[in-house]
Amino acid sequence: NLPMPENAIEIALHESHYVPTESPWADADRPTARLQFAATDTHLIVHVETTTGAVVTQPHDVQNPLDNEHVDINADGLQWYVGPTDPTNSPRRWTAAGLLVPTAELHGRSTALIVGTTLPISQVVQRADGWSARLCWRRADLPIESHGHIAFELVINERPAHRERRRGQLVLSGGGGFGYLAGDRRDPTRFVELRLP
Image 1 (cartoon, rainbow, N blue to C red):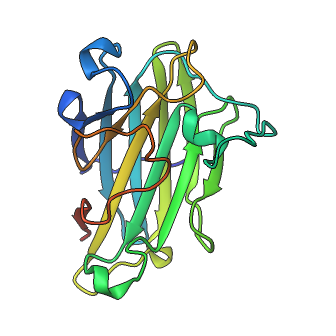
Image 2: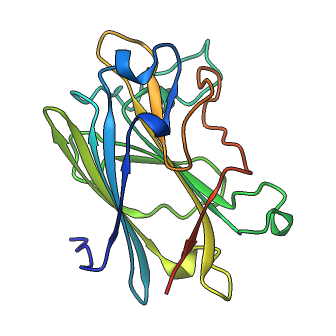
């Protein structure tokens, strides 16, 4: 069980956070998400609740030999990234990153996007109109700086059943642009800075 502290900060993602691959937000069934962030003495907790339509995922053993992206990039789910707020502290900018797909299992399906990443504990619930997930990182596993700051990014992928690839993304740091060929790559300058107490 991953309880959410009462002092959580809430952020709504909607049209201004949307990155399309083809259709603009209004023509893509207007996906939205609600994020909650909270920190305890020992953990960072993020709760995600999406309204992106029925969940579309692939079986874990599906291969895509003609595509250089991880197969779960084109399923409903999320990508997360953490790193130092000063990019000179890391040649990659992000020191840990992962991918979570909301399967029917309680914890979903998690994959590290950077070698050596410690994946958070997760809980997932599917709904008729979307899904929700709660992710819990140990503070000791995160590159939190002495003043409590950390760079963070969260990307929500949405894919309708009639498509073979994701239709678009809701991005914490803001939308715009075109995401068709982005894969799991993120612009390292577009981080969100969290300050943990």
